[in-house]
View 1: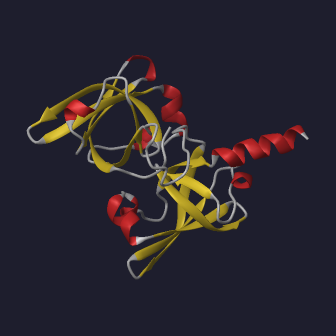
View 2 (view 1 turned 60 degrees about the vertical axis):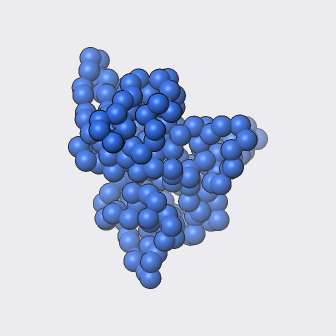
View 3 (view 1 turned 90 degrees about the horizontal axis):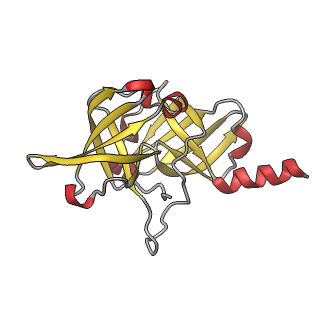
Length: 201
């Protein structure tokens, strides 16, 4: 589990296609290499992935994760390119501060940036959701975009808007977004369960 509070922005160093649609991704990070356990879960731009290797190249640590065909199909990972900036968050530990909201790292769909309004040190972003996800999003509710926990400002049909504060622009890869960019989207788990209960009624 994760909270959507990004702790590092990594850089994609290598993409290695493997058998049966599997892809290995190596990401540079500022974490201490010996603190990354093999088998650990790290949210990479909102996608929960398992560490299969780790190491250090000079002063720079790195870790390798694997993504299967289904993960590549439902997320943006298949479009990642070398040098890509990746929002990183390590798995939540019991007793850690819950600064965002509970996130599983299981992406529900891909949101597309359709409008950007740059303000003084902040940015207002509007996204379009894929079919079937809009009813999970509510004004003042929580949503995860590329691993970042955000509060929804407004909802209109299949679009919603968020306001990115200065700290979030500095601490994540969201600052460089442009119209048409696609982000991994995970709706609030509480909204999913509430919708399921309503369906049963």
